[in-house]
Image 1 (cartoon, each protein chain N blue to C red):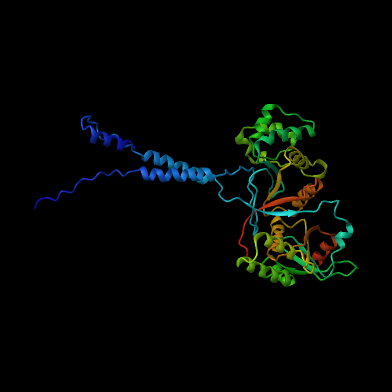
Image 2 (image 1 turned 135 degrees about the vertical axis):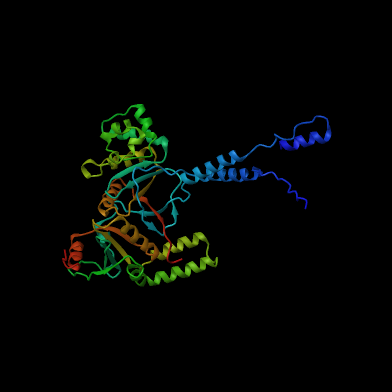
Amino acid sequence: MAEMQVEDKGKKGKKPKQKKHGTRVDLTPMVDLGFLLITFFMLTTSMLKPQTMEIGVPSKDDVKEEEQNKVKASQAITVLLGKENKLYYYFGTEENGVTPELIETDYSSEGIRKMLMTKNYDVMKEVEQLKKDKADKKVSQEDYTKRLADLRASKGAPVIMIKAADEANYKNLVDILDEMQICNIGRYAIVDITPDDLAMIDKKTGGAK
Amino acid sequence: MPKVKVPRKSTTVDMTAMCDVAFLLLTFFMLTSNFVAKEPIVVAVPSSISEIKIPERDIITVLIDKEGKVFVGLDTQNDRKEVLDNVGKAYGLSFTEKELTEFSKIGMSGVPITQMSAYLALKPEQRDSKEAAIGIPTDSLNNQFKTWIKTARQVNPKLRLAIKSDSNTPYKVIKDVMATLVDIKENRYNLITSLEKDPNK
């Protein structure tokens, strides 16, 4: 801008001879400063906001003892998180004095996920269909969210009880909650581990230690 | 042979364009940035496929490290003074205005309330040391963590809870924290995780 003014004056009047140089400012230091600040901001910012998992836990008063046991034995799957990233599960519940068989698995896609997906096959199939419909724009976003929630909570779907031993770590818990998401399981609960469960794990590991 | 005269060109490049670009980027970074909050301990969060983003403001972060030390951080600076004042009162302690102001500058803290005065008297550099990161007591006899959350909730009812814990934290600690939260009827909270690819997609 400053340059233009000088040129204008020169053309019009021709008399006031102004020195042409000096109107140009060396911008190098300014660029330096600019980039320095950019570097600072780039290093101090966290561009990605952390992801979160939302969980809701029932408060103590509104869970009655009977309600907890309401889960049908045929639908119930209990997942036990043991120490050293060990994972076990059994079907049914251990009431009536029948001890269900404990099966060892792992956190990989071939382990617990495969089992849950087979168990939850009907729901998985419908969710898949729903997702396809959504991709084809057949269902709206709200409709999708609502139907997804409905599907996940459908009656025939398995109910998972997550029981973590004290030695399990936080990653295990997040992993298993994640599996619930992946396998579209809407009904699950984090329950305290019972001495019976611990005994079962002990028996399974064969008292090796 | 006559020498070919190479016209001498000035070596200075016009920096205006570069300057423009630099400041454009600078503006972009300044506007999009939110500063990384300083945390007293480093935690490696586990990953999950959940894509829910954490809310912008009004979050109370519960930081749990590998050894089970618990820290509490409020993101709204204005509430911090009131929270500390009320927590202090609950334990029969009072803090001076200077201490309260000092506290409002700290993003995350984890010292037993009885040692808070001493902690606030430290220089900012000293607060980051390992010895200063003690953690808030969570055991059932002296559950100061409970008081913190309860007080924070009273001061700002809109607060949302976020638990940020290390991957290797034993479940026992998590269980205690969760049980405490259930006790004071905090039933919904967020677990902070990093992003992982959804195998279904």
